[in-house]
Image 1 (tube, rainbow, N blue to C red):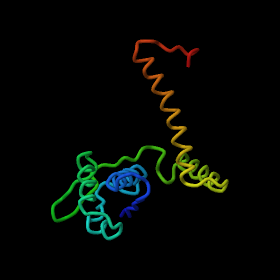
Image 2: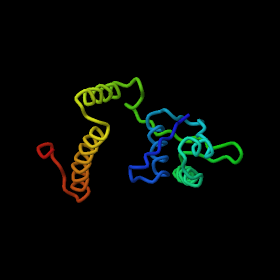
Image 3: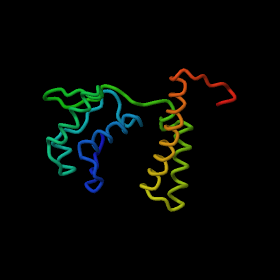
Image 4: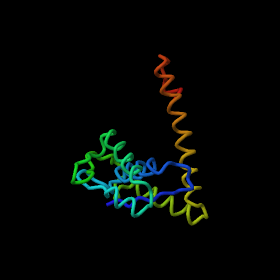
Length: 146
């Protein structure tokens, strides 16, 4: 079962934090199809947030097709977001784990690591987007242009 952590100082609404943490757990395989999410009452007890906040997050997750609310039974995972390479035993996951350990040993804090990864992803995304636009605009790329 997932334990939600709410960072009140982040500026991110609590319901969004619940959604993001659930999606992350689904991507990493910590939550699997059929798993039950904690009840709203359990989340409220652990995080001291409003029950309606939890219910909003769960409704949004349901609308996204990730969970199913079953009256009287709870909220259950209906879809996985695991991709190849994210499993605990994958070589790519081990490389990332090793890199994060080196970054932390080098003095980087969580926020530093996240900022670095986000910057690299953003740069990659921009390069990928411009490539996609060029292809989509009818311009052909040759191997020399790649």
